[in-house]
Length: 407
Length: 157
Image (tube, rainbow over all chains, first blue to last red):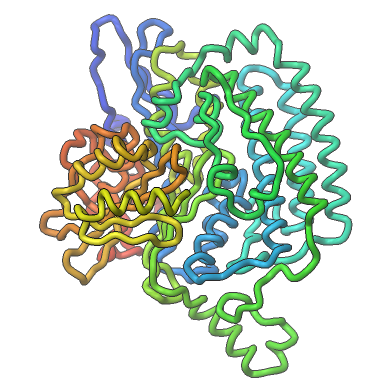
């Protein structure tokens, strides 16, 4: 039995014939050891040079948006966790904020600062992963181990807070799952010092390394105009020199009160994306240190019976709280009819949630504007024209996360 | 500053729209399908909405017209967003494509096409992205049953 009849091809390539007769068309992926995630690249090559590419994602599609239409608003939080599973907290908070906007809820000050702190923590973890994996693919195994070791300290530390290493389900509509455990902030400041030590070593190892520069400089270049045209946001757009950052442009959470810079690149190439991410991590650490000082005492959940579960003691002792608890779990929080688009600056770019409610306990529609997915529509502009081997660092610097790309 | 640009938008583009409002910090315009490309050209050219965020649709079954196609745009100069909405019936679920104005529209319209079956006139590449070639129906339509499975590779028994 030939392969063609046994497993039908899920994609239709944009081209099957070369434009010239001396070129060759190769298929890379969908499961390839040198690409992050499951993505298929069909490329026309002239020797080692890539002439054009056709990029297919969708191998991890699991029907996120359809599934969301049949669960209560609260039950969606574990699902949104699994969009960008490297920085799940940002997804949680962006989604919760969208629902809170529809319900007209203002979160408590402690929750606002904690969400900001944890968003920056997530960004740190995400950038560490991206930079580490990108370096490893170029053979810089030491740098990879340094960064991933620090990342693992952070994973363990976040597990102390949330109970999970990667998919935290920590946000709640109107608040957070639980407050900080004792000694959590002390350990955080220790980890940040360790981060600085190891990131300093990575700077020393790669920043002026001849091999690294040759592989990264002027590779995967994109201009600001092209990046905007293709909807690029986040570090990719900033690497071209455009200081577009939602944390500064449309401040949400506590960002308006923080002192930070928006690092930008010059060329829009792989080296600039590496450096923008490295600088952004330093800014995140600086923000987290400010937030640790600013963190006020007080409740983490709003006192609003429409979304916050009543205290367990009351559920067991008074009938109103018992009914309230049952109603919130079984029917879900009643979100007023309306529509909202709410976006946060996720580590990869603009992460937006477009929600439509008809006034019930479940959404009528849930749409996520995931940066990785939009980037897949324009990444061929960064790959075409370079060498075949450049696909690896370029794709690495785009940092496609299969979870939010394919949802 | 956001209020200022919203007032200018409503003064300039409001008359061409069926309705205009500001909801949760976003200017919302409902327009007729035929007015779409002209509207977007002015939005981009005169008001600097240079970032095409996304396009999706809402299935309002059993209302008629059934679908509401929704676009979001962002302006990097004014730092505000605009939402455009167009209602189209099931029998003629077609709107004009925005590929002439925004490169990212090409990819985003592909997704909306496979999920809702909206046709984008002028987009020559509407291959499925998340689904496979030959998938029947449009899964995000309300009349597509969530339990309905169409595995490309048959399940092992």
